[in-house]
Length: 221
View 1 (cartoon, rainbow, N blue to C red):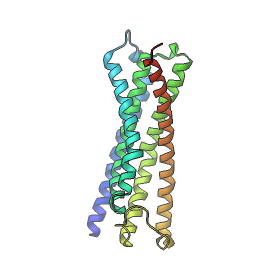
View 2: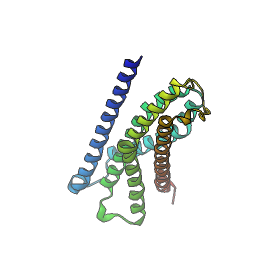
View 3: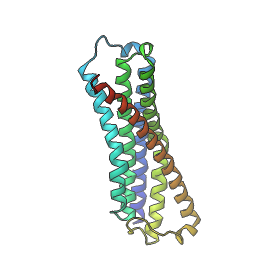
View 4: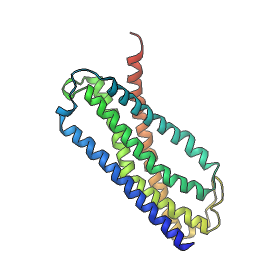
């Protein structure tokens, strides 16, 4: 069992490096897009750009609502703690990378149809909102997510070893928290999870601001 556990941990670490690599590729690709404005000029609006823009925004916003309000709460109150932690350790990196890719596409396609020199006040607010979504997703994907997964795996492994891994939902860990290793791992997990949640909420607020502008364009004058 010890060898299997080590192999699983190494596999999880390797997977996190892959997610970080792809996340960095997205960030570098987007920054290179910003550095070459001639590549994003367009003579007339394109239906393809419009589809990419609305599709990526909807995919990102929908995923945020689903993971935050539905999937996470449902799994927490339905699965044993160790299983919940295992699922979340795989869901978090994928979710953050998905948000990063979608937010990069949304912001890029917006800038294609609205060059910097033509931006008005309302459009500057929209760029700021979409930029916040991109930055928060990048921080979650490249920085916070690896810390969460590492602390989560250590925390839930110690809970399984202590015999409380099969508890569903909240569990009283007063005795286990007397273990300095568990307390430190659990505190790191809570801190990182709190930072990540704050970034997601910030992104949700920014997406709601942008949704307001999208809706105002669809309303009759």
